[in-house]
Image (tube, rainbow, N blue to C red; front, top):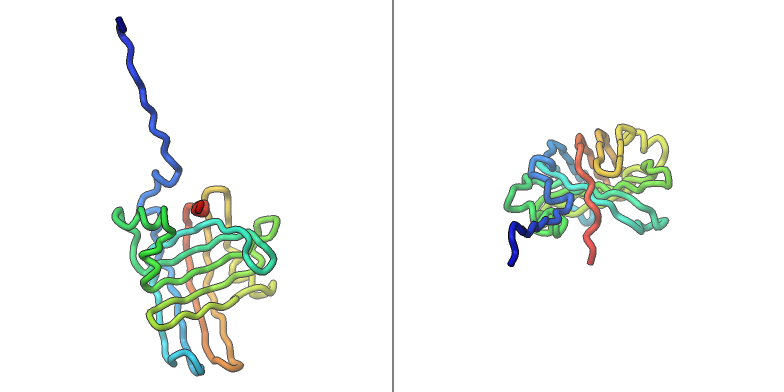
Length: 183
Protein backbone atom coordinates (compact mmCIF):
# COMPACT_ATOMS: atom_id res chain seq x y z
CA UNK A 1 0.00 0.00 0.00
CA UNK A 2 1.34 3.45 -0.99
CA UNK A 3 0.57 6.29 1.30
CA UNK A 4 1.42 9.94 0.63
CA UNK A 5 3.44 9.34 -2.52
CA UNK A 6 3.39 11.70 -5.46
CA UNK A 7 4.99 11.84 -8.86
CA UNK A 8 6.59 15.04 -10.05
CA UNK A 9 7.31 15.52 -13.72
CA UNK A 10 9.61 18.34 -14.66
CA UNK A 11 9.53 19.58 -18.20
CA UNK A 12 12.80 20.49 -19.82
CA UNK A 13 12.51 23.74 -21.74
CA UNK A 14 15.05 25.02 -24.21
CA UNK A 15 16.23 28.63 -23.88
CA UNK A 16 14.37 29.46 -27.13
CA UNK A 17 11.06 28.50 -25.49
CA UNK A 18 11.21 31.65 -23.38
CA UNK A 19 11.68 33.95 -26.40
CA UNK A 20 8.69 36.07 -27.35
CA UNK A 21 7.93 37.84 -30.64
CA UNK A 22 8.92 41.21 -29.13
CA UNK A 23 12.46 39.85 -28.55
CA UNK A 24 12.96 39.99 -32.33
CA UNK A 25 11.62 43.48 -33.11
CA UNK A 26 13.64 45.99 -35.07
CA UNK A 27 13.13 49.05 -37.25
CA UNK A 28 16.14 48.59 -39.50
CA UNK A 29 16.09 49.63 -43.17
CA UNK A 30 17.99 48.59 -46.28
CA UNK A 31 17.97 50.19 -49.72
CA UNK A 32 19.26 49.16 -53.13
CA UNK A 33 19.63 51.70 -55.93
CA UNK A 34 20.67 50.34 -59.32
CA UNK A 35 21.86 53.05 -61.72
CA UNK A 36 22.97 50.63 -64.44
CA UNK A 37 23.46 46.89 -64.75
CA UNK A 38 23.45 44.22 -67.42
CA UNK A 39 21.49 41.92 -65.08
CA UNK A 40 19.57 44.02 -62.55
CA UNK A 41 16.61 46.26 -63.34
CA UNK A 42 17.50 49.93 -62.79
CA UNK A 43 15.65 51.60 -59.95
CA UNK A 44 15.27 51.73 -56.22
CA UNK A 45 14.09 49.04 -53.76
CA UNK A 46 13.69 49.32 -50.01
CA UNK A 47 13.27 46.81 -47.19
CA UNK A 48 11.87 48.04 -43.90
CA UNK A 49 12.61 45.27 -41.42
CA UNK A 50 10.16 44.73 -38.59
CA UNK A 51 11.90 41.73 -37.04
CA UNK A 52 15.31 40.08 -37.04
CA UNK A 53 16.98 36.81 -36.01
CA UNK A 54 20.62 36.34 -35.06
CA UNK A 55 22.14 32.87 -35.44
CA UNK A 56 25.67 31.60 -34.82
CA UNK A 57 27.34 30.12 -37.90
CA UNK A 58 30.51 28.10 -38.34
CA UNK A 59 32.86 27.35 -41.21
CA UNK A 60 32.15 30.51 -43.20
CA UNK A 61 34.07 30.69 -46.46
CA UNK A 62 36.65 32.08 -46.94
CA UNK A 63 38.80 31.21 -43.96
CA UNK A 64 36.60 28.65 -42.19
CA UNK A 65 35.53 31.50 -39.87
CA UNK A 66 32.95 31.60 -37.14
CA UNK A 67 30.32 34.29 -37.36
CA UNK A 68 26.78 35.51 -37.01
CA UNK A 69 23.95 35.72 -39.49
CA UNK A 70 21.44 38.45 -38.78
CA UNK A 71 18.31 37.95 -40.84
CA UNK A 72 16.11 41.04 -41.22
CA UNK A 73 12.48 40.29 -42.11
CA UNK A 74 9.92 42.65 -43.60
CA UNK A 75 7.19 41.11 -41.44
CA UNK A 76 7.03 40.90 -37.68
CA UNK A 77 7.55 37.55 -36.01
CA UNK A 78 4.24 36.65 -34.40
CA UNK A 79 3.21 33.81 -32.10
CA UNK A 80 2.13 31.95 -35.25
CA UNK A 81 5.42 32.44 -37.13
CA UNK A 82 7.61 32.01 -34.02
CA UNK A 83 7.92 28.23 -34.49
CA UNK A 84 9.09 28.68 -38.11
CA UNK A 85 11.54 31.37 -37.01
CA UNK A 86 13.09 29.31 -34.23
CA UNK A 87 12.94 25.76 -35.58
CA UNK A 88 13.51 26.48 -39.28
CA UNK A 89 15.42 29.79 -39.26
CA UNK A 90 12.38 31.58 -40.74
CA UNK A 91 12.29 29.48 -43.90
CA UNK A 92 8.73 30.58 -44.68
CA UNK A 93 9.38 34.25 -43.86
CA UNK A 94 12.48 34.24 -46.13
CA UNK A 95 10.14 33.84 -49.10
CA UNK A 96 9.31 37.54 -48.71
CA UNK A 97 11.51 40.65 -48.77
CA UNK A 98 14.50 40.27 -46.45
CA UNK A 99 18.09 41.28 -45.89
CA UNK A 100 20.87 39.19 -44.41
CA UNK A 101 23.99 40.54 -42.73
CA UNK A 102 26.75 37.96 -42.26
CA UNK A 103 29.34 39.04 -39.71
CA UNK A 104 32.64 37.14 -39.95
CA UNK A 105 34.31 37.04 -36.54
CA UNK A 106 38.00 36.65 -35.75
CA UNK A 107 39.40 34.60 -32.85
CA UNK A 108 38.75 37.52 -30.45
CA UNK A 109 35.11 37.82 -31.54
CA UNK A 110 35.66 41.07 -33.48
CA UNK A 111 34.16 41.64 -36.91
CA UNK A 112 36.65 40.97 -39.72
CA UNK A 113 34.26 41.05 -42.70
CA UNK A 114 30.61 41.87 -43.38
CA UNK A 115 28.49 40.56 -46.25
CA UNK A 116 25.03 41.87 -47.10
CA UNK A 117 22.34 40.08 -49.12
CA UNK A 118 19.34 42.13 -50.27
CA UNK A 119 16.37 40.07 -51.48
CA UNK A 120 13.12 41.36 -53.00
CA UNK A 121 10.98 39.51 -55.58
CA UNK A 122 12.94 39.34 -58.82
CA UNK A 123 16.14 40.81 -57.37
CA UNK A 124 18.87 39.36 -55.18
CA UNK A 125 22.09 41.26 -54.59
CA UNK A 126 24.85 39.93 -52.35
CA UNK A 127 28.08 41.80 -51.68
CA UNK A 128 30.99 41.94 -49.26
CA UNK A 129 30.40 45.45 -47.93
CA UNK A 130 33.24 45.72 -45.38
CA UNK A 131 36.61 44.06 -44.96
CA UNK A 132 39.11 46.92 -44.87
CA UNK A 133 39.72 48.55 -41.47
CA UNK A 134 38.22 51.87 -42.64
CA UNK A 135 35.06 50.08 -43.86
CA UNK A 136 34.76 48.02 -40.68
CA UNK A 137 34.52 51.23 -38.62
CA UNK A 138 30.89 51.43 -39.78
CA UNK A 139 30.33 48.37 -37.55
CA UNK A 140 32.22 49.61 -34.47
CA UNK A 141 29.02 49.84 -32.41
CA UNK A 142 28.85 46.08 -31.98
CA UNK A 143 28.83 43.88 -28.89
CA UNK A 144 28.41 40.14 -28.50
CA UNK A 145 28.12 38.05 -25.39
CA UNK A 146 27.05 34.42 -25.24
CA UNK A 147 23.35 35.26 -25.34
CA UNK A 148 22.85 38.62 -27.11
CA UNK A 149 24.20 40.71 -29.96
CA UNK A 150 23.90 44.48 -30.26
CA UNK A 151 24.64 46.19 -33.56
CA UNK A 152 24.13 49.79 -34.59
CA UNK A 153 25.39 50.70 -38.03
CA UNK A 154 24.52 53.12 -40.78
CA UNK A 155 26.40 53.12 -44.04
CA UNK A 156 26.60 52.94 -47.80
CA UNK A 157 28.41 50.58 -50.12
CA UNK A 158 28.73 51.49 -53.78
CA UNK A 159 30.06 50.15 -57.04
CA UNK A 160 30.87 52.44 -59.93
CA UNK A 161 32.78 50.04 -62.22
CA UNK A 162 30.73 47.67 -64.36
CA UNK A 163 27.45 47.55 -62.46
CA UNK A 164 26.62 50.88 -60.87
CA UNK A 165 24.68 50.34 -57.67
CA UNK A 166 24.55 51.36 -54.04
CA UNK A 167 23.44 49.41 -51.00
CA UNK A 168 22.64 51.35 -47.85
CA UNK A 169 21.60 50.25 -44.39
CA UNK A 170 20.48 51.67 -41.08
CA UNK A 171 20.59 48.90 -38.48
CA UNK A 172 19.79 49.10 -34.77
CA UNK A 173 19.27 45.72 -33.09
CA UNK A 174 19.69 44.00 -29.77
CA UNK A 175 18.80 40.36 -30.28
CA UNK A 176 19.07 36.98 -28.64
CA UNK A 177 21.69 34.81 -30.36
CA UNK A 178 20.36 31.43 -31.43
CA UNK A 179 22.47 28.34 -31.92
CA UNK A 180 22.46 26.77 -35.38
CA UNK A 181 19.85 24.17 -36.18
CA UNK A 182 21.21 20.68 -35.88
CA UNK A 183 20.48 18.48 -38.91
